[in-house]
Length: 144
Image (cartoon, rainbow, N blue to C red; front, side, top):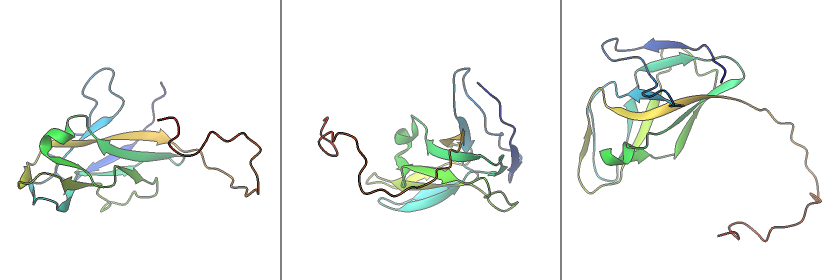
C-alpha cells in the first residue's frame, strides 16, 4: 500500500484530525464540527471540520461509515466526490445527511458520521463508436 501526503486544515482544533480507527481500516473517519438537528425527511449539511489539499491525480470519496445508519441518517447522494481542486481555506467538506426516520435526529458535535478515502484518478479519453463488438449479456440487471 502506498502512502499519499495530504494537507488538512481543521476549523475546530478541539476536534481530532481524521483518523484510521483500526490497523486494517482503508478510510479515515470524519467528525461533525457542530451539533446538527435534522427533521424527518429533511436533508442538512453537516460540516466535517476539514479543508483538504490533495495531490493532483487523486480525489476524495466520502461515504457512510458502516454504522452511520444507527444515527438515523444516510448520505443523500449515496457517496460524495471531492475534486483535487476543492482545496481553498474555506472549502470545508460537508456531509449531506438525510434523516430517513420519522423522528428528529440530532447529530452531536464530534460524532463520527462518515468516512473518506483518498483514491487515484484514471482520466479517460472518450471515443464514440457505433458498435462495441462484444457479445450482449442480456441487458441491465439480467444476472439477478
